[in-house]
Length: 416
Image 1 (tube, rainbow, N blue to C red):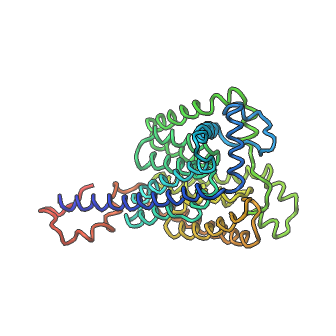
Image 2 (image 1 turned 45 degrees about the horizontal axis):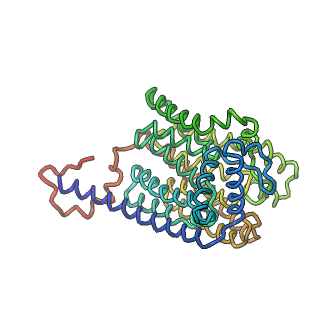
Image 3 (image 1 turned 90 degrees about the vertical axis):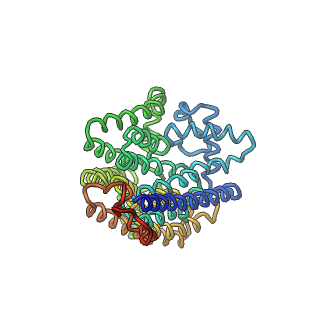
């Protein structure tokens, strides 16, 4: 029994080490890109935002007009991040490299989180493949290493929150992670109700700890801005609907099919909230149905938000990349490779929004790949058992074969 237990432990550790090495290689690749390539317009825009934050502060910036810059639509934690990055740039580190570091580092940790999520829901081999897939994902390398922004950071915190809540049984940390996810980029707000649904179903002690972690972080980060400039925060962040470009999904197809301009104006305006509500409702329904599959539910919900998005930007492709690897390897790989080509081609110019016809066609194909992946994810959630097996049990089939001929002790039993 002792020898088999050590073998299994060593194999899980080796698998984790493989993902760690791949994540480190992915991080190095991203940082080399960030250090040697200028990046899209967002790099310069964020530099402008950082200078504005230094001048006005991370709270009052929301009420400033910021001539020459787009609307400052980032949650409060992003302002403090920009303040710190600006201080580092004054030490001689190029800001263009710094602004792409948070997303690149987030991908490093996201690969490890995805591995831990998947080894509880499948074989260790599958978990390694999915973790490595996130680490070496072409679309994530492009959007994090070249583009930057904070989308990858938000997604990593959202997946970590689900993992901490249902896999690690750490509701306090899960609440903090959930709050961090929407404090750096507001898009994961669609998964917050699903997280609370699972916390409620887990019992009062879990709900109290999860709510305490979530509320404390929200009060710390959002409280000062809500007290000082609530209307500006509401207009810039909470009600932000994205740009008016017709480059992705429903709006793109409506344009191609020649649907009335009034329809496109509606879905890009007040109508986009309907799609957000659909995502929230889907996440809540799936979380109630299979609370043990909460990390997969989070991945599917974020993917659905991208599928139904009425705004378009290449960095938004980040929203579904890691989540589809939580659905399965082939779903994640197909999306990452196809949309990776889309992102690389789209980043050939200096602007991230002037997509060529080739890029648009790749994006159209990627939209359908995303739709297929989400259908697969929903089916897997529904088909999953109501509860998870004991930790690491699901991965033994993949790691016990090399140990079969070795002594197992008098009982031949295994240990969780």
